[in-house]
Length: 306
Image (tube, rainbow, N blue to C red):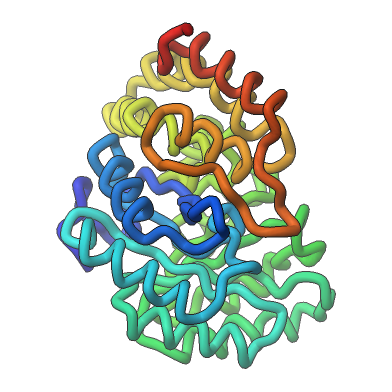
């Protein structure tokens, strides 16, 4: 593990503030590694002690194996001594997910994010065996990803109990919206939980989550870090103040239904990346949506009015 800004611990194995990073692309649709390194460095300079690459926000379904490996290697080389680099290894084909995990490890990733198999709607036994196969494929620590809004299949409590027995499976990114169930599972299993829904970051942290895996962190990393520090200091009032301050940004980035589109648009407007280009089936923001994002950033004080 790297020496992160907030060093990884058993209770906080991947740091505290992570963003599911977009994958910058050129206007022609090629992965832009120079821009990716610039973005990763910007995020680590602004409150992050972890990054998630090649996830849904990173358009992983549309990038290929070599592109994923090159992205991991470039980001690890740039910030791997300051942040935990978690690589997505998500597929509804178990053999493919295993290859993704092995390729991520070979590229230098520090950890893996493993989503429950989507679309195929496997049984809980199938979910269990899938995750076990990926966890067995490398020595890297694993964060499971529970996002039934995308996968349809949710991890059953009994499945999480079984998976928690694997030495490599140490955390869960929870985007179920069910804070109470998360509290029960983290108490029962000892797994570290990370909020996977920006709207519930404060609630999850207040219930004992280790940290957040964010989209709004693209533009609010320092604020998220301040919220985590306040909760670590047991100052719930200060943490709530920090959270309330970024509510408009959460609405801006997450409220459209596609946070990758809004995140790339915001980063382009802020001059962090040169292009908001995306690969189909995702479509980059049009002029009207760009103005929505611009107005939101101006209102948040992040961008000067023209």
